[in-house]
Image 1 (cartoon, rainbow, N blue to C red):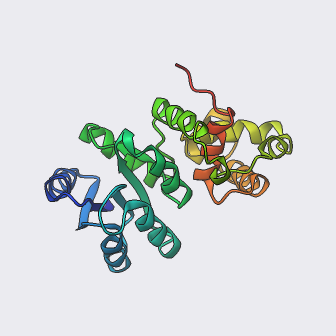
Image 2: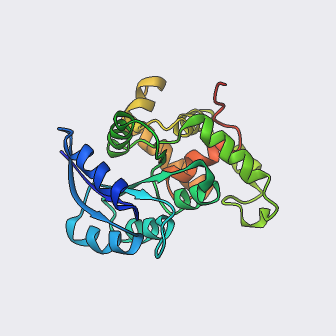
Image 3: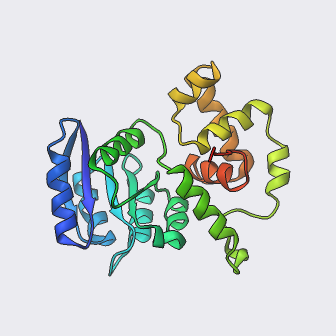
Length: 223
């Protein structure tokens, strides 16, 4: 059973989602919180497998809450709840270690599926939304604050063909098992390739590697 914490400043949203998810046999909601700081404090004692975190909250927002949790609780994963207007915060949250994001109006079954995906080692990056977000970020004027440096093309040249294939699959949000099945290699080999990718691209983790893949066209989503 996957233990989950729900974080949202709106009581109706928070408690309603907690009640619905707790009815699912795969999940157990172990706590709720109203902002990122409270989520961090409760997560330290409850140690949930996953925190479903609203991204925009008064007090300590979801980006800061994500950083607090991912820096201190290595076994707890964070999945963001957002609206499309939160574009400027989504990549910030991913850069702080979030394992993906969902729109708040998604059906409950989609949220459950996303939680299972993240728990199994995958990422949740809704394809058409991620492409739109990346494109919007590219249009920003303050490009000096981009997540990745301008020498990305040189880093891509350092990758082997197989590493590029694995990177493409990371950008599609696949976990190690799924990548192994699609590329006909072992999970251990995938894990090694992911470690090499993180090192060569000089990114923090597989989430940033996945965003790198989308941002620079390694992963090409179909329309």
